[in-house]
Amino acid sequence: MMKLGICGLPNVGKSTLFNALTRAQNAQAANYPFCTIEPNKATVAVPDKRVDALVAKVSPKKTIYATVDFIDIAGLVRGASKGEGLGNQFLANIRECAALIHVVRCFEDENITHVDTTIDPLRDIETIETELLLADIQTLEKRLEKVQKLAKGSKDAKVIAELWQKLLAHLNSGKPASSFALPEMTEPLENAWKELGLLTAKPVIYCANVDEEAIKTGNDFSSRVERFASERHAGFSLICARIEEELQTLSEEEQREMLASYEIEESGLEKIIRQGYHTLGLCSFFTAGPDEVRAWTIHTGWKAPQAAGVIHTDFERGFIRAEVIAYDDYMRYKNEAECRAQAVLRTEGKEYVVRDGDVMHFLFNV
Image (tube, rainbow, N blue to C red; front, side, top):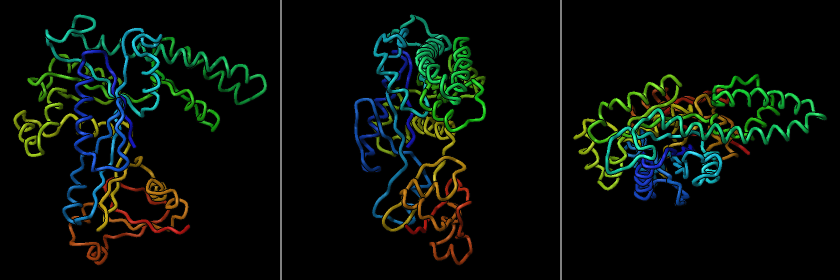
C-alpha cells in the first residue's frame, strides 16, 4: 500500500485537503477491506477506470480498488525539529511515509492569515525543508556516535561511520539526503541506510494550492513552485483544496458536472494519486472473475512471483506459472475462453516482468 504524508505550514490548505480525503474515505469504505479510520489517516480507493470497465464486463460479487493511505502530518512550524508545535509527532508520522505531499499556499485571501504575513511559496518551502534537514542532522549525529563506537571492532561499522561523516557534511551544507551520492549498497549498508529513515531522503510531490480562478492554468505563485519542482526533478500537482472539499459532498454525476464547469478533467485527488504512482515507480495489475475484480499495486519492474506474493506469500513461495492477458486484449474479446482461442492469453514463467494493466491468474503449489 502506498503511504503519502501531507505536510505544510499552517493555513496553506493542508487541513482542508485532508478533510476532503477523509470524506472520500468515508464515502468509499465499502471499496476496500480492513478499513481503519484513524484521526490522522485517510485510506482512499485509487480511482481507476480500468477497474470500472472490468466490473461492467465481469459483474463480480465484489470489487476492490487499490488504496492509498494519506497521513496528515501535524506540527510543521519553524522550530518543529526542536519540538516546537507538535515536533516529535511530525517526525514519527513522516518516517512511516513513502513520499511527501508538500502543500504550498499559492492563493491570496485576507481572511486567512499567513504565519509569515505575506504569500511567498518558495520561502514557505524553504522553511519546511530547513526543519526536515535539521531533524535529519540530529538523527544522523546520534546514529554516527553509536556506529563510531562499533567501528573499532567491525569493518562494516567502520565503512558506515566514514560514509555517515560525509553524509553529515552534505546535510550541514544545506543539501537534502536525496541528493547524496551513495556507493554500491552492501547488505549492511542498505540496512543502515533504511534504519536512518532520513526525512530529506523521501521523494516529494509539491502541491500548489490555488484558488478557484487559477485551477485550470495556475498563477504566478504556482508557476514558481512548478519551476522549483522541475529543477529538483520532483513531482508537481496543481490543486484547489476548496474544490476538493466541495467535490466530496456531491454525487459522481454532480462531481463530473462541477469539474466540467472549471474545464478540468480530473480532481486534485486523482492528480495527486497519479503523481504518487509515478514518483514511487508503482503500477497496477488486476485479478478478475465472478467472485471479485481487484486492483493490486506493485513496483514497476517486478517479476511474476513478486506480484503473486502481494496476493499471498504462498503464491510467491510455490509459484509455478502465471496466465496473463493484457488489459486491452481482455476488453477486446468476449471472455477468457475467447482470449485463449485468439492466443492473447499467455502462459508466463518466473522471469516475466509484469506490465501495468495485466489481468493475471497465478498457479502455485505449496
